[in-house]
Image 1 (cartoon, rainbow, N blue to C red):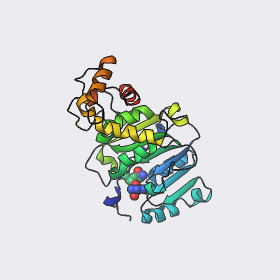
Image 2: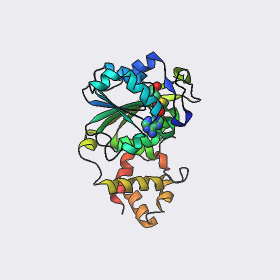
Image 3: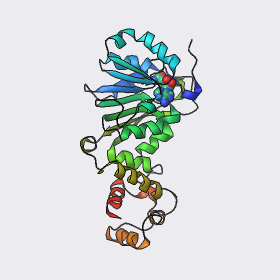
Image 4: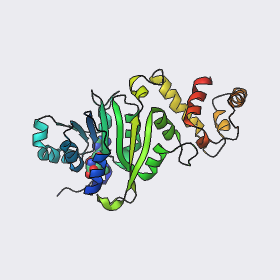
Length: 265
Ligand code: SAM
């Protein structure tokens, strides 16, 4: 009997209907799948039944032994590749050498970090993950929603996101104290093929810019931005673009943030 380890965020998905709904929400093509945290292999089994090639990363070495035993045939035929260790230690520019869809019931403690890595990994085409509902709302919010944040803007620039459905604690063993949601992000073609940003440096500068923009979420945006731009250039830009000077960070659209970043020096 394998005991769930809290430190690895282990809440095993037991509900057959939810597993089925995740598989149904997968893109219907031949692209490989990456699963982060296969755990006891319940979702892995369903993924393999769709005939897809799966690469799974599992940090818990005890579970890795269990998986090696459970999926002997699939490992032998190379339909399944199992990498034992922390997925973040294996993540260079790209997690694997071919294009892939990320499909996973993510450990809550590291979910945001993993999604951000996958967003900027050009080989990753789709992200279909189960995460904490509050975090899913942040990634999928639209301008004007109170959850709209730098995470929503980064997601919006790179892909199209949608919170598909909620999953209650009763669907897991052990049961978490929170509600989970399934989040789906489909990357935009232009981001996969040719970045909207010049290079990695520009991406980093954009992330830093968003940090400043949302540094005091209740203050007006123009005030937050005065930490990095002069008051004069901001006033001039806001007036020229017909942007209200009383707009708060969550109220400006993604496109306006992108333009602001590109045009203000
Ligand atoms: N996929 C299984 C399921 O749906 O029942 C397990 C999901 S459980 C929420 C998260 C899984 O991620 C666990 O198996 C845990 O050991 C694994 N995990 C946690 N941190 C990890 C990391 N940094 N790298 C790889 N796997 C990790």
